[in-house]
Image 1 (spheres, one colour):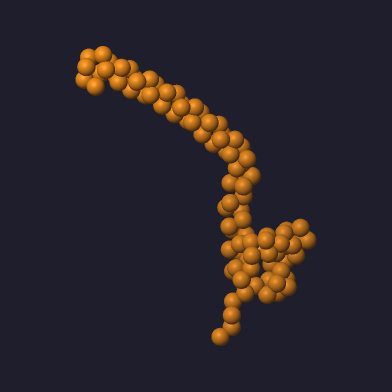
Image 2: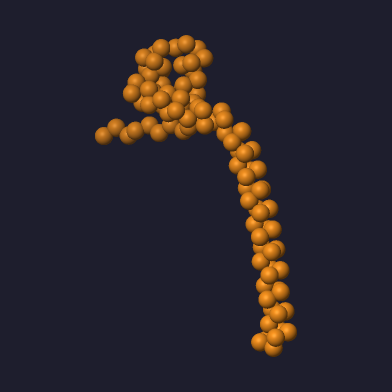
Length: 99
């Protein structure tokens, strides 16, 4: 039984890059790297499906970081208000003799 060759993500990208940059046919690329054309097309499809996510992730990362900072700030404010209310409640209970 023939053992399958496992390629890293970097190797897959290098194969795709070789195809696109050097304008080498799919058949020649597959022969050169000893891969099945279906595998090549699968990698190419995955590359194009995820390209937008990679290209625009920098902008969305900034938006996500800003949103996280805003939520953390809001949480700190809420926690401060809750702590203040709890302290007032304790003080009122002490004054009324409940504690």
